[in-house]
Length: 65
Image (cartoon, rainbow, N blue to C red; front, side, top):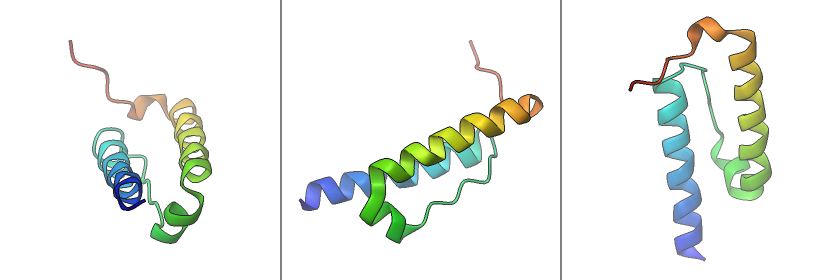
Protein backbone atom coordinates (compact mmCIF):
# COMPACT_ATOMS: atom_id res chain seq x y z
CA UNK A 1 0.00 0.00 0.00
CA UNK A 2 2.82 2.41 0.88
CA UNK A 3 4.64 1.61 -2.36
CA UNK A 4 1.47 2.23 -4.39
CA UNK A 5 0.88 5.56 -2.62
CA UNK A 6 4.48 6.63 -3.22
CA UNK A 7 4.14 5.72 -6.91
CA UNK A 8 0.97 7.82 -7.25
CA UNK A 9 2.64 10.89 -5.79
CA UNK A 10 5.82 10.39 -7.80
CA UNK A 11 3.66 10.18 -10.93
CA UNK A 12 1.88 13.40 -9.84
CA UNK A 13 5.21 15.20 -9.38
CA UNK A 14 6.59 14.02 -12.72
CA UNK A 15 3.36 14.88 -14.54
CA UNK A 16 3.44 18.44 -13.19
CA UNK A 17 7.14 18.81 -13.97
CA UNK A 18 6.76 17.56 -17.54
CA UNK A 19 3.64 19.45 -18.59
CA UNK A 20 4.55 22.71 -16.84
CA UNK A 21 8.14 22.61 -18.05
CA UNK A 22 7.73 21.43 -21.62
CA UNK A 23 4.33 22.70 -22.74
CA UNK A 24 3.65 25.30 -20.03
CA UNK A 25 0.00 24.32 -19.60
CA UNK A 26 -0.24 25.60 -16.02
CA UNK A 27 -1.02 22.21 -14.54
CA UNK A 28 -1.74 22.17 -10.82
CA UNK A 29 -2.67 18.91 -9.13
CA UNK A 30 -4.10 18.99 -5.64
CA UNK A 31 -2.70 16.52 -3.11
CA UNK A 32 -6.09 15.55 -1.63
CA UNK A 33 -7.69 14.89 -5.01
CA UNK A 34 -4.60 12.90 -5.98
CA UNK A 35 -4.87 10.84 -2.81
CA UNK A 36 -8.56 9.97 -3.06
CA UNK A 37 -9.36 10.01 -6.82
CA UNK A 38 -5.96 9.53 -8.45
CA UNK A 39 -6.83 7.56 -11.61
CA UNK A 40 -9.95 9.54 -12.49
CA UNK A 41 -8.27 12.81 -11.52
CA UNK A 42 -5.25 12.16 -13.74
CA UNK A 43 -7.48 11.15 -16.65
CA UNK A 44 -9.50 14.35 -16.26
CA UNK A 45 -6.32 16.41 -16.46
CA UNK A 46 -5.01 14.46 -19.47
CA UNK A 47 -8.23 15.38 -21.27
CA UNK A 48 -7.87 19.02 -20.22
CA UNK A 49 -4.27 19.09 -21.47
CA UNK A 50 -5.34 17.63 -24.83
CA UNK A 51 -8.05 20.29 -25.14
CA UNK A 52 -5.53 23.01 -24.22
CA UNK A 53 -3.13 21.78 -26.90
CA UNK A 54 -5.92 21.83 -29.50
CA UNK A 55 -6.83 25.42 -28.56
CA UNK A 56 -3.21 26.62 -28.44
CA UNK A 57 -1.15 24.72 -31.04
CA UNK A 58 1.43 27.54 -31.15
CA UNK A 59 2.50 26.73 -27.58
CA UNK A 60 3.33 23.09 -28.25
CA UNK A 61 7.05 22.36 -28.16
CA UNK A 62 8.03 20.28 -31.21
CA UNK A 63 9.75 16.98 -30.55
CA UNK A 64 13.48 16.99 -31.07
CA UNK A 65 14.88 14.46 -33.39
